[in-house]
Length: 462
Image (cartoon, rainbow, N blue to C red; front, side, top):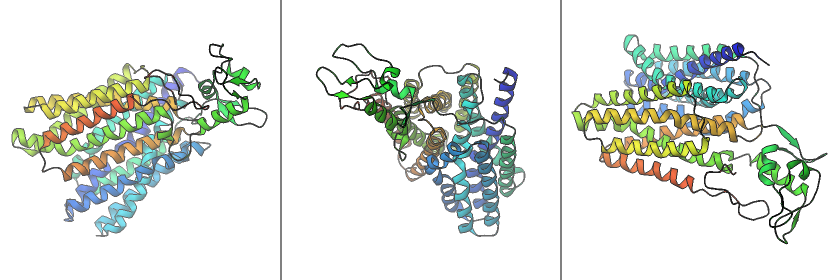
């Protein structure tokens, strides 16, 4: 058992490495666009190369399995940071030499390392000791800091020196993050405690046993513990219903634990509910990066004022993240995620309805503040409901889908830039509210014997 001082030290070492890595990841896309624009290649090529950097995040779940399978998860994270640095430096050199195709290939490699820099670091928080709520608050804070610091550092360095220097600085930062991972204590991405299903039967977690059982002896019979189920006592499915053996219960529990390798984020009900709302909300958030400029121009006549709107959103996110680091979110995570998603939908609606520039600043700041608990609730859901042995996959997968959705939203906003901005943002807000409502109404799957589950709306049934 580590001492409280050692736990705090490990947590802040982790925060340093995660913040540096995520700052590089957040700023690299901006740096690539600035470098292509400075080289006379135009913004279109910059957009394509930025897409090459973010597209591999769609495979975040598969990439995250490297963390699950590693005996020492620090190694794949360090390797991911070094790979990101080398690929980003290679892409920078290729652009300087006028080789955009080579640069695009290098950026795809860097993008494949991206999920390790985001969700991969989050997967380690459970092994750092101390309060998991505070660890998630600190995780959210690193996202908030890096989301503001990354683009700002790139823009500042590009102005003072050159876009090439800014990208090479980011590459060097990821090497520093790789070294930082080696300073962390040897933690494991711990699955749920397994419960043997028998002498040679499948292995299942205690939680999955309790989900499949209780088994009743009749319509109103007493419930039995998981221990009695494992002893092989028969379990009836209801009044006069068929008898279910312990092996059948164990097999169902094992199936629920493995959750099908391809779509774990969509087959585990709590993860599905949060994943769907995360993708929709992230896409709308990506659209605001474009429509902030359009809305500012419509109000003040100066498109450059859109940067202040995005700055207000970033500062709001940073303030909310800092508050959660001090006072962690302790609400049930799935319910909190859906409620905050609905609040974000209302925040986007405020953006669409704001008539003056001051109101727009306030609306963007509100969206930024609400983004912090939205991220924290998402992290808590992944922490609680990741199947045994799939923690890295869940964390990196959802983080990757979120980045890809935000990039897709930005691209879509570019195509819709000529449309009425307030109408588009209002429709996007309605989509966010609709996703929260749809996932709130997402009913539990049928029980193993075909009977529907009778959980309440907000219960965390799979």
